[in-house]
Length: 393
Image (cartoon, rainbow, N blue to C red; front, side, top):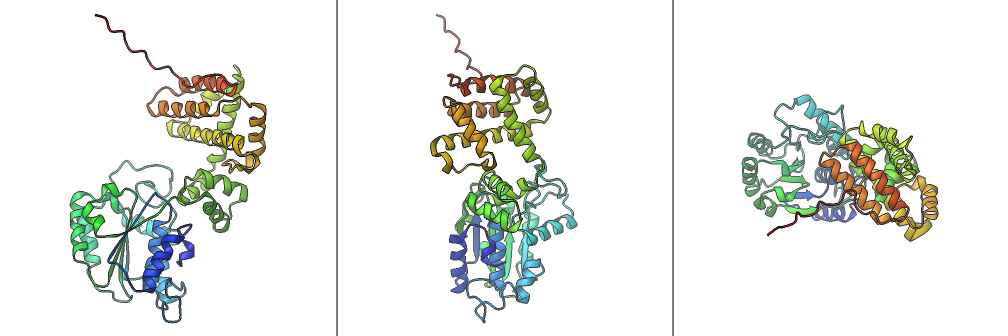
């Protein structure tokens, strides 16, 4: 996996490439940042560069050649001196762990961890089980990485989601960092460094991975996944800087339906049609809390596009690029619409749903409030706060 397969993190891959070319390799690295932005891809590319047989011997000095035996073994997860680990629940099956790692080697941006994908056959849910590195698990890892490399240049250990170590596990792992092997390189990935021991952080060379630009995600979706241009542009702007999230969205057959439902709700809210609006509210209410929250997120994306178009016109970087004509029509026909108020109303509705307020009630009041805001009226809250009780002497 040469560096160019890592999406949109050129500054970091160039720094790692220089370290490889100069043979100035630290004993431990921490790649940290949001999920799905390339930490895992960079870790595997780094491991491949470290093990490449042709590096500096006719091949590139700062990257893997991608063709030699060592590179192909790393790419397929078969190199005996590369060890990749996932935190897992107590009842994880070996064949399940193996399949997840094989998927990771094929596409390091795919969601394969047990926390966000308890079952590989059922994406989109979050595990209710404890997904961690236990102290026993860390001791087994230490045993694996204790030996000098038998075939490659280094013994490389990649610990994915290293912020999921329990305290006992972190203390055990700290001993490895304090006494690293000469030819051992550890790469940790993490999202929440605030959940890691400061002593571990201090012993790692840290590289921060930032959210990806929408343009980089869009280009990668078109080139790697053959996603149609309009859909790639839409998904890229919905993905919040995460290529993994973008992949999940492209696989979701419900996304287009949910967006259409969100737009239909906004249109019906404007007219407050007593015949069709209650039926749609009933339809939305049957979806469940998480889908309703996603619906609000899609509404917010639409209103954001209205704001951008009002300011920048045809040059606006829209999320809903395939709906540009509808957005232009809304802004033109409703010049007095209070878009900032609409954003606040939808956000308040999302908070109410999160607080388990009845969905149909929230949607009914939201429709009334949005109708007023679209007409330029001063409606900024769904529910007025309760007045403070009067204090009597």
